[in-house]
Length: 300
Image (cartoon, rainbow, N blue to C red; front, top):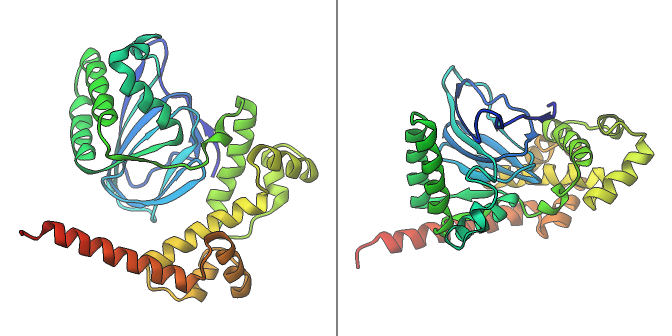
């Protein structure tokens, strides 16, 4: 997977860009840009990568991402034409003017945009309303789009239907050169973490010697390259344990680990549980949530 510093909004012609995607898969690589981005997945499923976060996604996924936050969506295989659909709005922070969000009336939106630097997932009734309005706005004239986007942001801002995606946003507060280097390495890991990865290749993406790269990567991210690889493999293993009935041995090898002993050790080190214990805990929590929903839905 290559890295793309994607140009987003054309500053000369528009402060907002609406995009409708309709294809067999999402082909945008792990990339970043200077604009905010609101993306709704109308159709498809797979894994969503935002910063250091890796989560499963499916139709209905809605996220608001801040500027320079690397991200991509990877489909589960290649579908037929039209099997992957999304609507995206990219906008500059000052799309209503440089000081507009400094007004008291717009403070909720300013606070929302600040939280979006870590990435936000929008859920519930707010998600349903935003998704409907996004589709409607794609066919509106430019000025109505500006008004509509402001209303969308305010709707999210005054709700409680959102949660932070990336718990480690501080590592992206980098200068453009460092961000470009680090994101290239992340892109390499995201594309290949279930296979064998090489320190030499990662150092090449950063245009450094292996020794210099190891020092640089640890200084910037506060973790080693091996730590990063292990984190993604464990996240993948957690998804398999929670959402499939595969044996632990299968999960081990499908997640990129070479032997079961090392896998068990690393899994417990990262999660605090053995793989089997993690699965039991997840299933117990899922059953509890279902029972709570059933109780709330049952007429008293």
